[in-house]
Image (cartoon, rainbow, N blue to C red):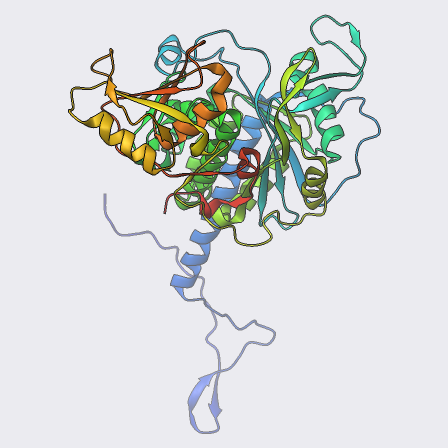
Amino acid sequence: MSSTQYRPRPRPQRAPRQVAGPAGPARPARVPYAPVPRRRPRWAMRAATTLSVVVLASAGIGHAVVSSVDADIARVDPFKDMKNRPPAGHGMNVLLVGTDSRDRISEQERQRYRLGGRPCNCTDTMMIVHLSQDRERVSVVSLPRDSYAELPEHADQNTGQRHGPHPVKLNAAYAEGGPGLTVRTVEKMTNLKIDHYLEVDFTSFMRTVDVIGGVRICTAEPVKDSYTGLNLAAGTHTLSGGQALQYVRSRHVDGASDLGRMKRQQHFLAALIEQATSSRVLLNPLKFRDVTTAVLGSVRADKGFRTDELLDLGRAMRNFSPSSSEFATVPIAQVAHPVKGVGSTVKWDRAKADRLFRALREDRPLATRKSRRADSAATVEVAPQRIHVQVENGTDTTGLARRVDSELAAAGFRTTRAPRDAQERGVTRTVVLYDPRWDRSARSLAAALPGSELRPVPGQGATLRVIVGSDHRQVRKVRVEDPAKAATAVVRGDEVTCG
């Protein structure tokens, strides 16, 4: 085929008459009322066309993707028939609930990430996520699942039986009345109006982390939990979805139990924001589609959390960075508040909690000044001078028990000064054996031995035993501080992410 292009024959036109100019040759006369043609440079036209196509395509893909995922989201109506709700504040409040549902977890994943056992049909994690009205700041407040709560009158979602107001742990609200009772209870406790409800399970959490390429976590000391199988050496790690789930679920790492777990969850969220924003995930329509599908494909949300809200949230997140986020735990007055028929609960500091939630209602930052980074010393409940310790060597390394005994004594612990060899040999992980009556002392000692395992021995008495394993590197300094105060300090995202 010839490469010569066909050109239509132009119509015959009458030649324009020539007119003489004031200083120059004759030029064609203008045809009356004919517009003067203006030609744009070709590069400008091409650039404008390309930009338009890109913008329209990106917006179209984003809206189409979110709309399609929106149609597949399981919907709940937690606000149905709610009356006497708190007044609306400024900004948007989302109640983010993490459940222990594991129905779609494969058997291989169950075994690998220690997800066996029966789910409790309750909330494993609960946070209030506040997006500021100018969409430039996000504040996340963790609500301990064992918080003392009083449920309002309700019908049990399992039996239909009516119940009057009664005390429970906060996570029981979901078990008794589902999302609706959970929202009612949280609004009553915080006097904060919840605008949207979002429920995430194990599956959606894991898939989201995998889609964005993992999340980078830094730890100053080894982090181990025999219950979840978490085992991280000191340093920087990029966690896959399953490893991330182990990280945010671990409660037996440092003796801080659920308070320590919430701190790790907050650190993880800050790292997740950093990964999502630094990798430009939210600016890539195809990547945005994958993340949106992973996040929203297996969650439950309220009926008002639709496409426009999701796109608005996505646009806001594009300008986010770790410094745009701040994290806190509701202020606590008592970590172990006994309640008859309920057990040990977490009691809030009512006055401080009210101030925190008032700041959210008024759309004010929680961190009024730059928080200082925590020093290298671990915070403990019991002073080392009050803790008696017997050190034993569980390895074949000569002199290890004597060295650890000296290190603990230098840190202030009352060691026996008579270290010995343990009956157990070949111990790889350092173990702290303790009588359950001295559990607070045991947690303080474990904090000084990073990565150690706590093992209760009823009847052992007031002296704690340390069987040193081959993993021992050093004794960490400790300082006495109320654990609730340390756990509820407000931090910004850039203060807890790597680097």
